[in-house]
Amino acid sequence: MDLTNAVEALTTTVTPGRRMPGKIGMGILLICWLALGVLPFVTAVPDFRLATGKIGTSGALTVVSCVSLGQGRYDCRGRFVPDGGGDAVMVAASPDSEVGDVMRAQLTPEGDQALPSGTKGVLRAMTLPATGLGVLAFLPYVVLYVFRARRGRKTAVIAGSAVTALSLVLIVIGMVAAYS
Image (tube, rainbow, N blue to C red):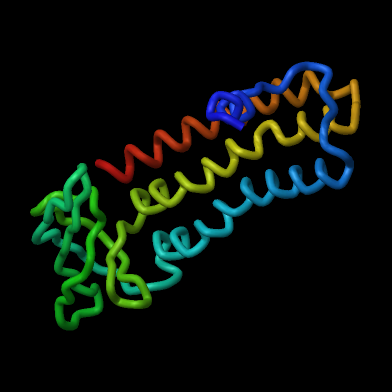
């Protein structure tokens, strides 16, 4: 087998009329798709709990240093002062911070990082679940297609498009909140 044949095998496209995976294969693919959409919701729970003050310590964070790691990445440190009094603690700050930023923050239970709290924190935490929402948007259409259901496909496409648009709006809002 020469290199040309290997490249052709990798670049062969799926043509209409080819057979779909069997029932078990399609079931596995749909379960993977569902898991990929639900996982961002599950992993965002601690961020929401932190942003709403359910866990961690409330206080004020002042960013004191940001070191460039190259390629647009930064390592920021800040001084966290708890609301209830006590000693200031040096913690990792959000890498999108700038030196001198002062914000309401929540100290993680581990005590090594402070993240924005309140509205900004909630909007920032919303970005990941909004991505999961976008992943799940067209899953109903695919399920209808796989089971060869004719009724409801048009509605599923319209609903999927609306959910995708909502997801994109939520992602943009969350990103703007995170970087402002």
